[in-house]
Image (cartoon, rainbow, N blue to C red; front, side, top):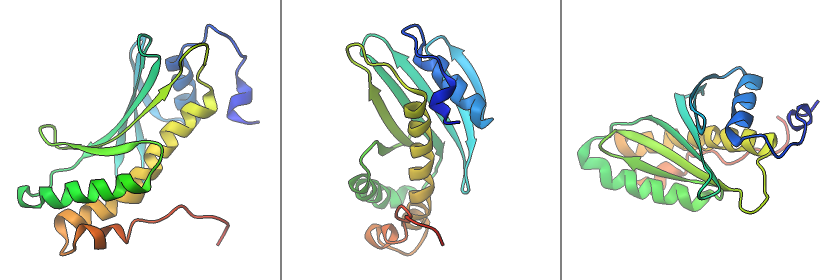
Length: 167
């Protein structure tokens, strides 16, 4: 049964309730921080990712922020920012940034639910999975750009593209 088929359509379903159900479905650790916010920890190959989803009724946006610790050498920050720009050129549904004071690499995405639009479980699931997929894809390139002897362009060459088919 598809994840979306487990829900009864209703105008009363809050986007964060949907996110909580998705987290339960995947058995991810989570904490409901408020009525409009949930935090999750999702284990990846390279890192454990902290994911926060927050609902803003005023803007009709479900915002996802995926973070992980990243403390590059100060002298390589220019290379990191160039690598982030190159990575952002390769993605469509979100973007990377670096929060220097917190020493966090961040993936951000906002799902706009204007008018009568409602979040679907499959959309929330896709948001979280896409965040992890892109973080996993580009993490080695960011590492190489900051700690390797490589240019950001060369580092991006190791970022794995989406795989199609089976091996």
